[in-house]
Length: 255
View: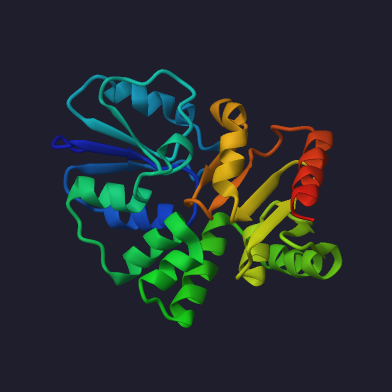
């Protein structure tokens, strides 16, 4: 680490926003990046235990970006997030930009909007269809979505889509749901699930978050994106029986 280090950033699970943050910080004087190439389901602060201990309670500002704080944090640690109890915050990219004094360009603003409010938020910034398609494609790739996952998304839509009066439900063949979301947008309400996880998108997200307060507190459920954003289960946090019960509750609610 350089002697003039004043800010240390721990990167969380990969998506386009996280990679854009990394690119923005690379080579910036006084800043250092710690990157363990994490996914959303293993993005925990404990992965950075060694680095955290080394700089704990020093003059170096430590910033954990979208990390689950599963260990004790030192006095100089700062959370950067916009999910769950931080869902009213600006995007992580915007928060980091403010910390390091960077004015985001048009592309970065679209990346931030995508992560904060998906396609509608990008549209509100005047993004063209080509720009939106490009951002969504890059985001899926950054998450680790493969060509096979894209094919499985098309198969799930063709074989497992059920459209009810107020909600569309799809059982996925892959743990990556974004290829299904992107293909079905625009939607009013969308529920995607497998035997080990579920995710609800669109109108009614806030109401579900209110109903699942204890599950959110226990870190079994997470949400973000505003009133018409998303809410879903952490993979493996519920039994298959529990997931199917949730699917049935949603189905009956909107039939």
